[in-house]
Length: 595
Image (cartoon, rainbow, N blue to C red; front, side):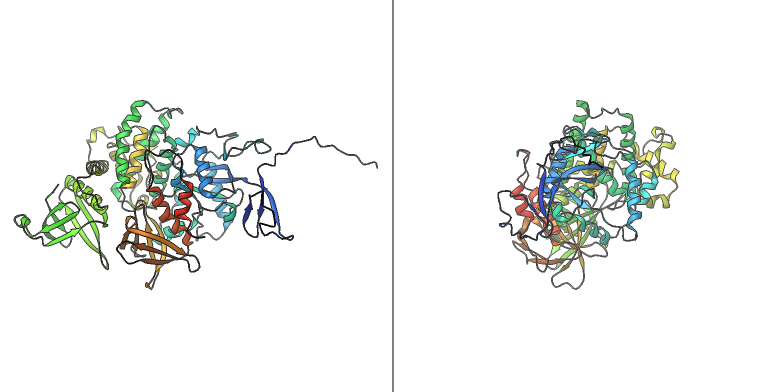
């Protein structure tokens, strides 16, 4: 039979995105002017000629999945910057990627993947269009929504909050977590200084895009509709899944804000992105408060210490002085406390009129615990603000003091539960309380009771615009004692057992692993240098006027912990008058250690 040849039409293939990958050494050969010999490659080496841009399935903070084309040869820090540019999220340095934590209770991987698909279908899944992958020049990152690429600069769907459609989703995801469980999740953060390929990330793998550093710079409703919405979503899920603790009154306030946001999101047209000037102006005030939260005069008051010895206390500069009576306030105090570097925690129950402040004050061998009991809300707000500022070494003369007081008062006001009953909406069926509070409250109360409390709390927020409500939600999240704390398991030098180390935007805290109580705090501002002994996986931190601190990371790469410390120090160097460009090299210098 004569051979029949079928000539293929000539298709010009673009190879410009391909590069060589050396699997054995986990290295991209990107220096094309180098010889293979210079790379140390022998004749038997196996090299893969593969595209640098590959698909990733990203789960965004709102729990929706998107397919995104990302450069697998860029360092993760750069890849995240490109992803955020595509999604129109400013300040990408605050976000990063982490691997999905495995649920130890689920033995079968298949089962977990099936559940994930259910969740994915619940939201709009972003999939690549049919013809875009072959031969077209690629922008640094491409994402698809439905069948068309997500247009850069206006992925407005990401600015819209979608209500949780079914309580089953919450129940499926809900896992009451111990502090140790929370610490284990943090094992999943990727190394920002290395590429996805170097960290064994596979094409089509699911990675979580999250705000990693809880230090949100220059939030502005004019430019940040998507950033604000994704931050709101991350905080909403953290509260619903109890990744962060809050009181019952706070939970009802968060539920009321969610109810309000859901209602306004449904009512507003698809074009609500073009906010009226009025709405933007309204929220400017809320944002100036928000920044104070992030930064993070004598006032004599009668206060009680827990243990219930009553003292007359005065607060001057950053020192609280306690006297046996008001008359003795000119003499020598019975007790004096310098609050610089202390841990300040609220203990408040508004309906029970309980306004306590717990202080952990650093002393040579650890922390002293002191409780202050205030008579009423206003007094509490002033003292709480003064304590928060003093812990950072600032006094009440600081310009942020009054804003901090207002911020605390507005947070308390949103939790008030006895507005005029005639203004409370009748209970309707569309509240879905089981989608607005964490599952533990569904066991404790009937749905009707929860609905009534949500509607009561809604009176305090009913006048807010959509973006203001989201900002207030984020602000309330920031006011929770555990906000911004990332936990890791560690073994301290000289310590017998595993403990926790908590890292926040301005300090490190040694914590009891079972109770979460702070044992000792170290401020970044007091740090001289920190480094890692990679062989024994030990992090050592040296301070200006304290003994150095060494710990070995348990169950997590010490690079992750090192990067959190360096990352927060990098973020603290940002200034408003800087242009938007990031000093990438400075980030690597502060976070990569000596790899």
